[in-house]
Image (cartoon, rainbow, N blue to C red):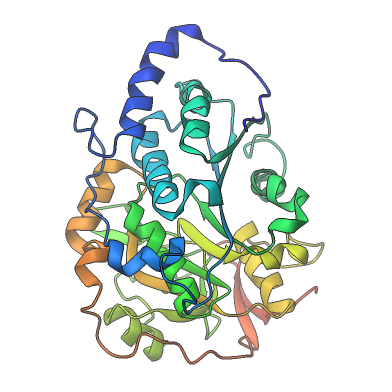
Length: 370
């Protein structure tokens, strides 16, 4: 079911949108420049669709895909294509796709609007809303939080769906196996949330992107950023967190205080208590995903893990470079070193680094202002 809030703004984009739609619907389409992804390991993930009775870990009943997107027409063949391939694999009748589009001028809305009949024919429940909320106007974190909550609103309105797994994606070039691995690891680890690793090219070599959001179980950022703001130490991930560094290097999941990293998979049960928000008055200025994780800990959902075999970038071209360097999930599955399970720490770090900006970095109690 599509929530129609407008008609296509520019009919001249219709033809362009049609070519994008074909590239989205056909995973093997090679006419469109997009990240090429491996075939799925059906054996590894088949239990997620209920092929194995009485499976362990227990199966979620439904899957809810959520994203906010603006000016990303070129990325949609890979991003939406992978989501729909995942939904077909999991069982489309179990899946909902909720998209908030942000007044794009490059055909993003037209493509998403043109998709609704196709998505409904597949059997996926579809919600599409175009929002005029603009993070560049007013309180950026507050607006971003509103947009994320808007994407989740169809799920929140239906309290019967809290046995659902939420897959919340940023505008990343992602493979279907990345999505399924995050879902799989959340269940296998008995985690409340799993995240990937996202990267950016600010020079010749990639650096971890979501450093402002993510914090390890020592409360610190994933790499050190001095007051002058340089990223010269970005290569030295988890420099003061030996356990996380070892597990990262061995491609083993590891517990963190907070993460998002381009893609997060979490139990919908947290939404009974937690929503995206901006900082309270006198609270450390931080991003809405950081606050989401902080509130998860507050309500007893502290099993948050990074899955380092999932590596993401924000364009098809850069994602190919990342996959060539960091490899695909299927390159690591079955080859990881050591125990993949996590000995969960029940308590968060006493203090967490607040990084309002690079110059203003202070350590504060993890539950400050709660």
